[in-house]
Every structure is written in structure tokens, then in C-alpha cells.
Image (cartoon, rainbow, N blue to C red; front, side, top):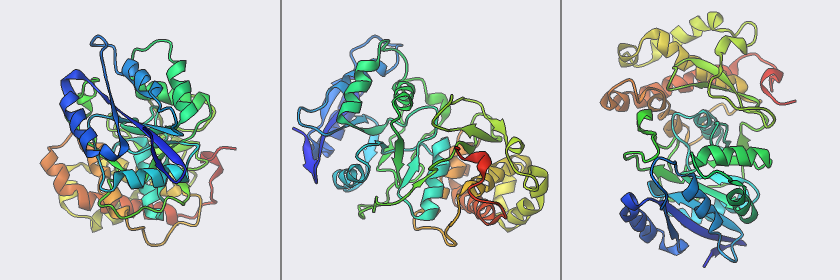
Length: 365
């Protein structure tokens, strides 16, 4: 039976695999108020999770207005059901993702939202974050019906379908689920730890009646954990999303290219914890800093002088998101706070830069 709250009637499914069914059952017991149904992958190995995702998205409750699909390796926040319904009521027509991986393109917009005190960020990755995702009833059924080849990854198929049908995907800030990162069943283990960009700290009710970070952006800055360069990635509604971006200077304006930024970078580096340049080369730190400077540049105007209450925790995940594959996690953990402050300083520099906003080169239309 769908769980009803304020006009939102939510049916819930937990996607799982026979090897992890015990974890799915434990998650279902924690979410008993949502009456979740387990959908167990019965397909042959090596075909990805899309086939099971199709079954999960097709299992919409008879009277449900919205459908939630959770993967079995998530950790819901305290007060999850209440926060979830509050979020869906605020954005009933959108695809609402409850998780954002700390090293993703979207994670930068989550940090920008946290700085602004906003509770939403646009999802701008080539995939849809699907660890916890809510779709309106018909959107869920349409996605399930649209899949003709049930092989591969659900997050890529969801992204292609949602973009093709004009359905916007937004991420909650804070993230309402965390990723309980164990051995990946879909071949993602090489990516390193994938935790939330801005995990919910407690059950304090979130005000979801806010703006969305990244609204109207067609290009987003990001430093990939694969390439560790500051780059621009297309994220507009019309056009193709790609795995590789354009290096930072190709879209930085005159006077704000990397050669112009060294003085600001070294000023921030001098104020940073000396353990940071002791662990990471200045050249690499400059790419990290440039990414967040560029993110500050993309802010459309009216940026808060002082960061919102979630900004510190959101920026503290930036370093781990980029360097989780290159440094021991003990080092990453020790540097998260000072590296977050370093990224936040770069972001503030970008927001304070003398630039017409919104800068036409990065915005649609």
C-alpha cells in the first residue's frame, strides 16, 4: 500500500541481488513505515542492473502518485520518510534524487547550493544518481516500458530517458541517503569510495522551498577523479553529454584565465594548512582550486556573503571526492576539513570576481 503524506502517495521498492538480500531485508525493516517491496535480480551475471531496474520501476503501487526506488546499499537519514515526502511535495513533477556522489559533477552544484542555503541542485552528470530516486507515477512506468535492451547500467538509461522526455532531475541538499560503500556488483569498485557530497546530519526538517543551484547552466566546471584537471563539461538540456570535458582556459574569460590566477591561488595556499601542499603537489592543488574558483564564477549573482549552515560539511567532501583513489584514506580524512576550507576560499574568490552575471558563455540562451 502506498504511503500517503500531504497528497503524495508513495510506493517504495528496494532493488537487490541474491548476494545482498539480507542487507535489503534489513533496510526494509528500517523503513517499515514506507512498506517497501523487495525486487530481487534474477538475471544472469555480467548483464548490469538495468533488467532489475526495469522491474523495480514497473512495480508502481496501484494508487501511488510517486514511486521510490532504493538500492540495497543506502543508509537513510534520520526522519527519512518525513524528509522524503517534504522533498517530493516541493518538486512533484521532477525526478528527485536523494544521493549525490562526492566526486561527481553534480557535487559541485550541491556545494554551491549549500553555500547559498538552498536545498536543491541540478543533476548534471552523464548518468542519473539512482541510489535513491523518486519519479512521478507515469514517468516511472514510461521508463520501464521504454527499455528494449535490459542490459547495462540503470543510471545511464535513466539519464537518456529523462533527458529525452524533458524531465528535470534534482538532488536534495542535504542528501537524504548515504552510500554504504561495499564491493560493487556493477563494476564500479575501481572508482574508490563513493560517499555523499552533503550527508544529512540529523532529522532537522529541511525547507525544500528554495531555488535550485545550477538552474540555466549549460557548462559546469569539474575536476574529474580520473584526470584531475579543471575542465568544463556541457550540461545543457539540448545536446550530448560527454565523459571528457574542455580544459579550463577554453571557457574562462579574458583576465580570469589560469595565468591570471596564480597570485590569488598562492595567497590562498599560504593561508591553508601546510599539510595540504605537503601531501599534494602545487600543480595538482591549482587544478583543484581553479575548479572551485570557476564554480564561484558561474554563480548567477546575489551570492551570500557568508556561507549557509551546510556549506562547511559540503565543501569538506570535495577533497575526498577528487583524491580518494590517489592518497591513503587516512590522509584524505585528515585533510578533508582544511582542503574544504581551501576550496571554499577559491569559491568565494570566484563569486567576488568582477564579471557580468550570469555570464553568457556558461548559460543556456
